[in-house]
Length: 248
Image (cartoon, rainbow, N blue to C red; front, side):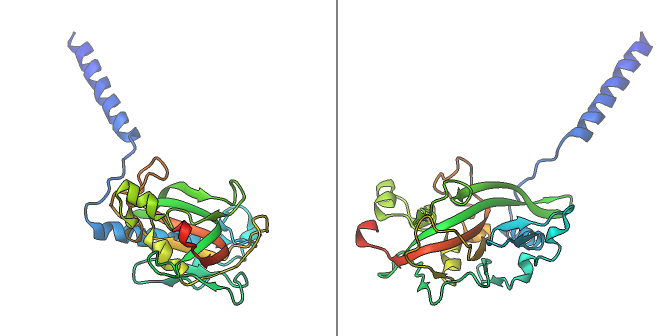
């Protein structure tokens, strides 16, 4: 009887040990915002080292098996500019309008710019896994390039109409991503491109979480929380003009 008991005990201990070995450790969001900011910055740098722009300006990950992209330049080699907020923008050579329209992104300005854009935007959570800091999960905020294929005008995360926010009793930062607005100021917009014109993406804006929604409440864009998420915008401005009064 004692032997049977010992066998059962040994088996249960073995099962418990195996279970612990198989368990996947869940990432715990750091309480210290400085740690979150550090994770974002490290993951963004890693992202820029692991991706490049193809002939149409799409962000592509380097392949470990295909040599076709061996001569492509990393995003980190395309003269990225980092702003004090942590926002990074990359202007793609040969893809800008000349002279192009200046983009006024301050939504309260009397000459604020309405944009029509082809855009792919993904969001990412930077995590630390056994000392390896990287973007570990991703989702799509908007994708007109692989989706409907038509440009969108004034996406709400760029500009929210007064009626929408006022009716909901919310401030602009509940909807708008300030880091995107900040980055777009450094680009020029095309004017009057037709919806069906082939795209040639102008560049990239990378927004760390502190310049996006940070840890604040926000509009339900994706049915998932976008707190602590960083965003990558890959885009072309098809038309840029002063926003009509009836669309403010």
